[in-house]
Structure formats: C-alpha cells, structure tokens
Length: 469
Ligand SMILES: Nc1ncnc2c1ncn2[C@@H]1O[C@H](COP(=O)(O)OP(=O)(O)OP(=O)(O)O)[C@@H](O)[C@H]1O
Ligand SMILES: [Mg+2]
Image (tube, rainbow, N blue to C red; front, side, top):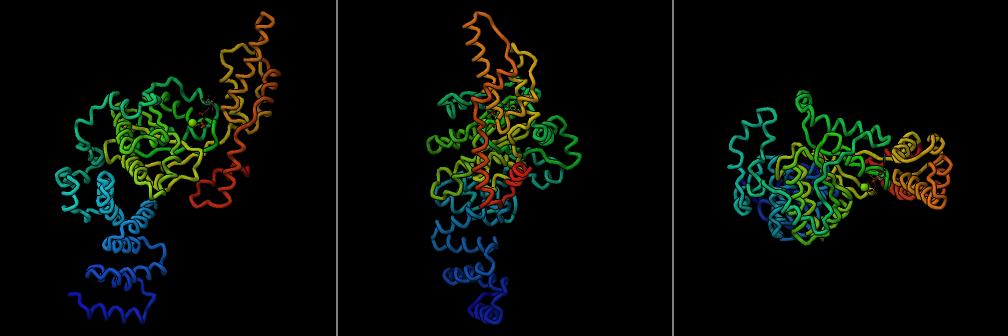
C-alpha cells in the first residue's frame, strides 16, 4: 500500500473515533516514522505510552524516533531500561547496537547486535556488520544445519575471539588483574565435608553445577542445557566464599576468585580486557570454578547511565557469561553478594545467575559443626557443642571462628604463664563467646528496610521466610 497523506489522514480519523485502539496508533506512528515525520511519530508513541506504559514495543519505537532525531541520550535511557528487563525485545538490542556504535563503543555495539540477531535473524544488518568489521554469515555457514543437531550450537562461537586470544596462560592474566596480585588459580583441597551445615545450598550446587559437569549425558537426555550459575546472597561471614572454594575442591577443579570491585577500579578499557582474560583463563583451565565476589558492585552501577565506562564492563561481563565470546562449557560460575537489593534483573536471566540462594547464618546444628571443624586437631576436652550452639544465636561462621581463636589465645597465655599446656573446654569457649558480637544482625536490619520498601524481584522472600520462621 503506497503511503501517502490520504492514508495518514484516514488513520487519524479512525483514531479520533477510536482513541483507545493501540494497534491503530502504533501503526500510524510507524508510518510517520517511516516517512521521516519524527515529531508527529513521537507524539503518537508518547500518546500510546500513556495508555500502555509498560509496552516494550512502543518503547522501542519511541527510542527509534529519538535516535532518528539525534536525541541519543533520550533514546539510550529508554533502551537501557528495556535491557534490564528479563526479556528485552530484539529491537531493543538492535537499537542499542546503533546507539553504542554512534558513541564509539564498538564492543557493546557488537554484543547487542549479536544478542538481537540470536533472538531474531531478521535483524541481520550488513551495513552495521561492515562498520563493526564482522561477518556473521561467514562465521556460521552451517547454522541451520547445526541447530537441527542436538547440542551442535555449543561450539558456535569457537571461531571467536581471535585465535591468539585462545592461548592465554598466566602472563596476560597477571597483566590484566595482577596489579595487587590477588587473583590466582587455586586448586583447593577444601571439600563439602569441611563446610558445616548449608545442606540446601550443597544440594543446589550439586544439581546445578556438579552433576551437569560429571554426567552431561543424563542432563542432555532430559533436555537440560548446561550453563548458568548460582548467586549466593546473605549476611557477611556465613560461608559464601568458603563454599565456593569447597565446590572446586569437591570436583577437583581449579578455582579463580575475582573481586569485582577490583575489576571496576581499573583504568578505562582495562577492566573489559581483564574480564575477558579471566573467562578465557577459566575456559583454558576447565573444569574451573569461577567465583565472582561483590557482584553488587557491578549491578549497582548499571543504572548509572552517565557512566559509560562502567556500562561497558557490565555488558562485557554479561556477554562473557552468555558465552558470546567463547565456549563456557566446563566453566562453573558462582557469585556472591551482601546486597542483593542492588542486583539488576539482567543478571538473573536464564543462563546467567538463574539460581539465587539465600545463605543464612548457620543454624544450631551447623554452628556445632563449624565449631567442631574449627577445633579439629586442637587440644580440647569433650565439648558440649549443643550448649555452645544454643549460646551463639546470630553468630556467623566467621564469628564462630573468632570464638575459637580467642579461646585458643587465652589457653596459650595460660600455658605460657603456667608452663604447661591445658585443653580447651566448653567453659573456656563459653567465656570467649561473650567477647564476640554476632555480626549478622546489622545485615538483617538493612535487609528489613529493603523488604519493607521493595520486594519486586521476590529475592527477599527467602529472607522474609527466614525472619518469620
Ligand atoms: N558453614 C561453614 N563451615 C565452616 N566454616 C565456615 C562456614 N561458614 C563460614 N565459615 C568460616 O568463616 C569464614 C568466613 O566465611 P566466608 O568468607 O565464606 O563468608 P562470606 O559469606 O563469603 O562473607 P562475606 O559476605 O563477608 O564475603 C570462612 O573462611 C570459614 O572459616
Ligand atoms: Mg566472601
């Protein structure tokens, strides 16, 4: 149908009769957009949004109008908000690709172009590909064929990144993150047996991470794809880092721990490279547990649209997680945060941290176990663990370790004075309990505030259940 003034007029009068007809209004807006009549198109989409404020397609269209009008930051605000939703429309990725390209951020542009294309092959854009210097047609000549085969798409990104990146050893990694020498490849000897309590979490990790690694064929038979990680959240000192390390020991894999705050503190551009190197390192050392601490650092800044540098790190992180930049099989991803309320829904999408587990303070049984583990091999009498557990409500695992430390120090001092060693007793532990303040209460106070004001993600349900138990 040739679009002319007559068509537009007809649509307008139909809308005057029927102002609630959203499809009609969207159609009119699209035509105006196509004709380059941007202010009029903008008006229709704005009007449509007042009637359907959450409609993602209208938002994309409005952003498209802004983009055409060179109002890039307005367009970006809409698109960024859409990208934080569980399933952004493919058009949002397409527009993001254009907006990032415009701002000179090639990496993010490419990431979003690929994400959009994956969801909707119709978005193929040879012009954009040329400007990005990529050629998806050549990368995947047998795409259709491979998709028909089960699991064939896993190798899909093997030709990307560049081959020289595939042989990363410690060198580049050390350059990338090693400024403070913190992160390194470990082979922990710790196993689940060293972790007191946390039975639910252990089971969750077994099902989501360990079994798929050890019995991929069974999971495949049930149509379960590997990938995705577990996000642990809860008060400090309750074993999140500890169990991540023990997971690696449990499957005898290597272990890399990354504090994301450190990554974010790097120079512009350096952070993305480091992240990529870390994932490459984990891929090369697979099976490998890749543990991200302080993910909230990343998530909190995501909504800070002004900070383009941070945004790039986040997009890089999501792209690495999604396996866009390399094959993640054998890379087991765990993450932890004390501030789940800062977490962006984009992180919880399938294939990312699609399991979130609350790590509460240890219950009485677990407190007894942790004390027992802490005292193993030390000179101690027969200890009444049940009694100690009762007296340590609200203590974290770390608090309990301090209790034992303090008791040992006291005994050492006594031994020095008396010239003879004496064993740690229930009584001496009860004394040192008085010197340690349970550290989890403050966290729950903060959590309670967030519970009161926002529970949109459902992530607090577990905290509430715990508080109301
Ligand atoms: N369930 C547990 N079993 C045995 N030891 C534990 C357990 N929980 C905590 N601990 C001890 O407490 C220490 C602190 O725990 P960890 O560092 O894992 O806490 P976290 O949850 O990661 O805290 P943060 O949120 O501050 O990073 C551990 O190194 C370990 O010694
Ligand atoms: Mg920790």
